[in-house]
Amino acid sequence: MPLLSLPACCGYDAMFRAGLKPTTSSSRCRSSRLIRSHGGAPDHAPPFTQPNSVKVPPSPGLKKQALSVQDMSRALKSLSSDLLQRFVDRAYSFSEEPSLNEGNFRPVDETDEAVSLSLSSLDGEEVVPADFPEGVYIRNGPNPLNPTQTVAGSVFGSTSYTYYEGHGMLHAVYFSRSGGAGGWEVSYRNKYVGSDTLQLERRKKDDGVAFVPSVDGQPYATLAAFALNILRFGKAVKDSANTNIFEHAGRAFAVTENHLPYEINISNLSTLGPYSVNGAWNQPFTSHPKKIQGSGELVMMGTNTEKPYYVLGVISSDGERLVHKVDLKFEEGKLIHDIGVTKRLIENDMDGKSRFGVMPRFGDAESIIWFDVKNHCSYHLFNCFEDGNEVVIRGCRLLGSILPSGRHRADKSKWYGRAFLQPDKDSEDFDPSLDGILFSRPYEWRLNLENHSVYEGYITSEKVAMDFPVINDKFMGIQNKYGYAQVADSLETSKTGLFKFNMIAKLHFDTPDKYKLKYQKNLQENEQLIFVEYHTLQEQQFCSGVQFVVKENGIDEDDGWLVTYVHDERTNISQVYIIDAKRFSEEPVAKITLPQRVPYGFHGNFFYTSNQR
Image (tube, rainbow, N blue to C red; front, side, top):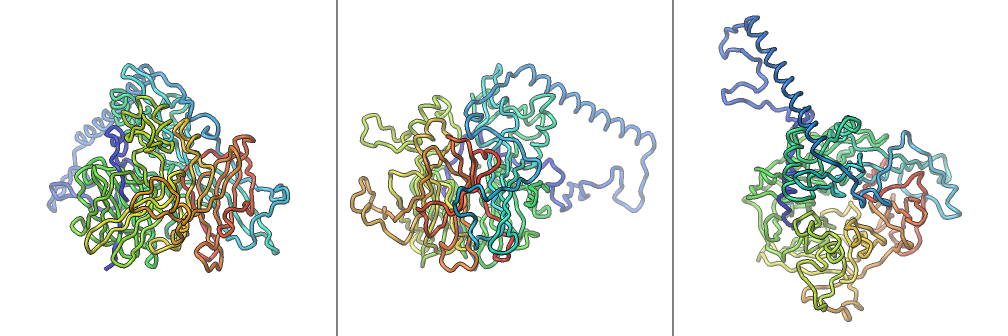
């Protein structure tokens, strides 16, 4: 029986939950199925139609009355919208959140056309390898449209946007062969994801404020912002589509988990519209769906702030059909960012306490086997696979949530300054509820399906924080040897609470680190440290969107390259690095200078245009 598996996450702040309300106001998002009213007629049945064979046409007077009611309704709606906008304009003052508009977090403009890149300007460094595949490397990330309106003050108090709310912007580098002898044409372009709320805010940009910042702030101010946004736009927060870009059935989709994905035309980065699996899916959509090896089916989920709180879905390999959809009957809403799959199982988590659930791919709520694990937060997984009677889960583990909370708001600088740094457990003022709770480290859980026992522990040194894991996607759901992750510069990150990554790690899952096992302090009973290689960037250089690119005709799992966007804060120049995965700690085989700065962002993907995928 084919199976699936579900990651351990933590619950999230009640204020934030209101922002995850699914949005179905766009007609493009609605199901194509007929929804019948209590009387049995379709909800779009013509007015005044009788249920028998005799149809009585409405009188001209009734028609006129119906039209006047519709006109009045439209007028009242327009009037109320105008009054609400005037209230916002008068009751609120807006300013800039400095951290969202400084350095390489500052937003950039779109490029009008693709820009050809000159590979002759690489100062003698090797350019794109001859056996590198043709394709497009795309990274998603937040790019606020109105950075001077990211803080709101009113009689209710103050609220502000978080870094995670900026409108999604895609940055793409195109690789295509030109002629013989391994010649390459490389170009760059960037573009906003054309979400519904981006279009709305563009219309509002010159004549008023659109969404009031609502996720981070004082309680009454946050509630007021939620209410005003819902009254004006039908949703509490924006559908930013800024977190990831994934591939399915040869198509590309930009996504954030509070909305449906937006399909992207990768040739020019234009947005084609929301993807609802032909109307069969009307839930939010996870940022990290997983493809099943062999079948090509896509496993995803949607989390809600109202019932059903968690719905699991499986999409056909051609992307046209929803072959499985099930309510897993959670008792409350959770923010769940990632999901894991094996060739037979699905893995996920769900409660105030930390636990994993393992279920068949086409199972239901009753088929889940639950495993209690040590309390923590996990936002990203390397991989899941089956090893005998065990399900093995490897991911990045934190002790707290990066999302806003009451304690976080009380003193941000103190909270950031201690939560992101390696904890000193021997210090007199060590606070286990604060110190190091956002210091993320790779971790392994082994869930025994026969006796329901759990074996868990860290697998890398306590001195290095890392997250945003990736693997060779050909090994998704099956046992693999290597994983890659971005290494956080904890000191730089702790200054603002915005991640900066100054190294990339290659984890050798099957190779123990004998030296560290012998000399590592504070090693817990179940911890088996593995060997890790590092690719270190130069001083004040930071990366984002690391992705593994498979070598054409490669044999070994690590036959390929790591691609990443790198920004140099000293020169203000952004580049794309191509790093040989087998010569990981050496210099990149190519550094491609980009025509403009690329702000730091989230997840990337490589879309192969050759026949190898």
